[in-house]
Image (tube, rainbow, N blue to C red; front, side, top):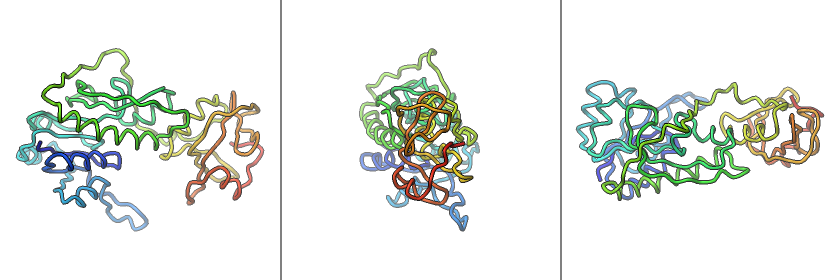
Length: 298
């Protein structure tokens, strides 16, 4: 099939690679390069870098609302557009241009967790599973009919980074299956019941409140890892906590019980991985070799 691919971050790269191996990718759309690094030089997105390595034509318009951009998109003559974490709203003219429409790879089991941060929110809410849906795009926010879906369990120590990588590869495999079977798939409208919205993560959500139950603190740490990273203050330094698990023990909220096990409002959390400012992530053992914890964390 002639495919237009639309995506931007690392999550989208395995999908692009899979499509390139099986289909004709006629164009790749992604967000424009952004200033990054110490020199604040424009850096291409992961999708742009991968597309250029594959020799694919790249387009990165700031908007698709203009008639010239829409005409250029239609002129590609694509059979289908595959969209995953692109970052721009697709006007109706773009949605209607490919013969088989636009298919979105969404990282949740719709209608749960429509929106911007479905992986983070699933972990933070304590969901037992999440997954990938291949959805026919319409004008709404992740409201289209679902063609294929696949669930995966959320393990007790899974972080957003872990699920990100797993779901990205599931999405790559599932979109190939959807394209192979497209004429025979029956779109299933999403039910009205069970709709939730995955709001974009705000940095204000990152500070740990040790008075919360251990289950909530553990889910916050894992759900915000690696970005923006749940944090606590240790001797005036902002420390990101990246991996954790529920642990036995109790005490005043924030009290260090032993090693890197911290008492919460109820129960306790053992920190397994942490990161100092300007340093690489470290295991708890490595971290405690370089910094002594105070009796109570704030």
